[in-house]
Image 1 (spheres, rainbow over the protein chains, first blue to last red):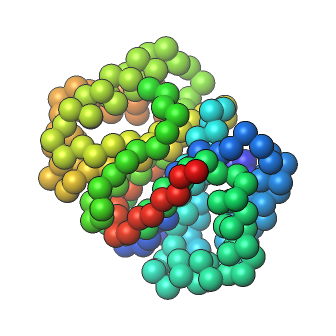
Image 2: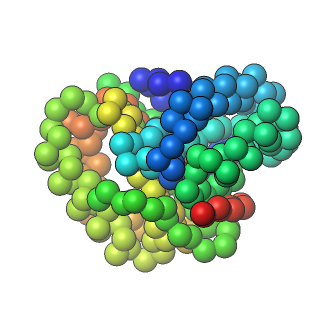
Image 3: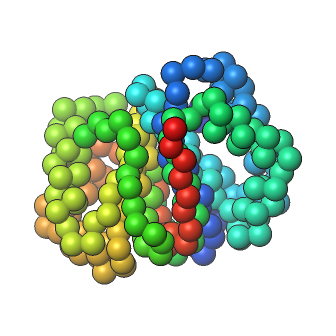
Length: 112
Length: 112
């Protein structure tokens, strides 16, 4: 899932799901496989606009996914595979996380 | 500025500034010094609620800072040191960035 550029999103308004997390020290392979699969599944959901995702060597990660509407976020939340994987996340992969749903009101970018 | 836990924020609503960026390959020391200084300055601004910040080995970073209001964000934007440092960021440190201002509508967390 490693990308070397940033998500390209339309003009606001749209929604962002900000997921900040701290990984446990185990399950790296299972986690990587599930993360890859979830990224792929999410990208097929109606209303998906893109994602930016980073994790550092300390196990702290931030994933921000972008969605056209609250309904699009709710649809992804109800996805059956995603629901099962969230459960595994809480049981095995995360020490801590914070999830925030936010409405993007304005945005601007810069590129060399 | 390395932290091993996540920002603790009050109940929504509040604001998030989502800053996703790609570093150039140079200026690491200057950048680290400026980032540390900006984090410290931001934390002294009225309406600052916290920050989560991660950069990976590929130079992709996401920093999400949390603010009580639009006015608090505008205040930080007007800070003179911050204004000068933003200019250096565009000149020297970033290949690309996207900045989004978003209103956090709901949030929930998990901790082992």
